[in-house]
Length: 403
Ligand SMILES: Cc1ncc(COP(=O)(O)O)c(C=O)c1O
Image 1 (tube, protein in one colour):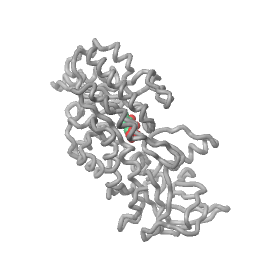
Image 2 (cartoon, rainbow, N blue to C red):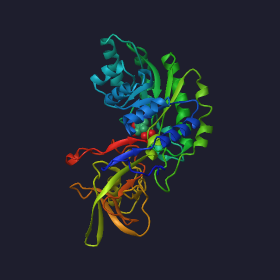
Image 3 (cartoon, rainbow, N blue to C red):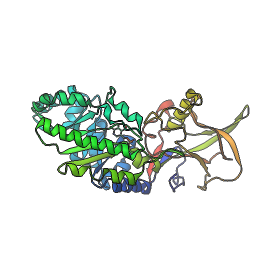
Image 4 (cartoon, helix red, strand yellow):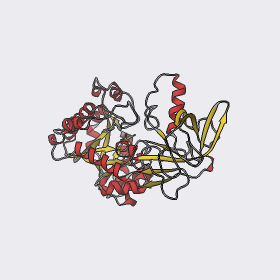
């Protein structure tokens, strides 16, 4: 949990608190592990404007996953050259808008053709990137799930397709391929696996330069840097990462190497606060009913749902909606801001919505609370405010604060 476990003065309702210092510490830690890389912030993790401003102030670029995110990044003052727009399913309007506002990363061969046509219609000549779905040979023993990348994916262009279409790519009239983007998955805790992916990117970039007979200018090796979410979860060894990555960008010294991270930078810096508005007993169960539930903070409810469906087995992570059953710790803070202590009881913490799924924690031991105390949920800085179905039952969206 961040050290600042105090309610925001004057705040009475469900809200998020993001701790600036914690974010800055994470940026510094990742920066030290990757001194030869430009870091991009994956803003889908948490697009709260002050958070974006913080990232800009610390010199990060932006990994944008929609035209809306490109626009938000521009609004915050990121330069188009520091915004990389990568996602499947971009519309023609998205492409036309982004060609002048960011570096567009093509996600399919069809999109590549559309980009070329649209750039021509707009009278532009644009540098773009290719998102590549690498082949199965990447899967290191330590992380068998990486081997899945050789399977069909809606993300990126299969490596073998890229290599088979080099001729057509060379013939593009209005766009030129300047970089490659590879992203395997989130929450990779093996530094060795990340280094292997990066080494693969270096080889791919070389192959592409030879095949296209032109120079690239950047390589985005993705990331997937695991944030230690909850007790017992593996955490990324940053020193091992630093050592493993150290020689790789130097193999292509002309190129700008980039890596992108969302959760690693923001998740642990955030907490979700929601006041207890009722306490009731029902057939032997004590409920703490909170003002905000899954409409403001969805992930704990999803974790409970998956645990129920897994019938005692460990549910498979499903990022970014579900990381692990232990991901979000819950505590009670008194209305005056002091952490609750003393006598405890087993309770279920439930939100106000008209669904039995609206539960923050089930059968959890907490210090005895009173109406007006706060339930505080940890690891709420990434994929929480932005992924929750705010608007359900026309309830107010939780406010957010960067302190
Ligand atoms: C292409 C891409 N880049 C970056 C991210 C950010 O991942 P994380 O927040 O785990 O760093 C994601 C997450 O889904 C992604 O799909």
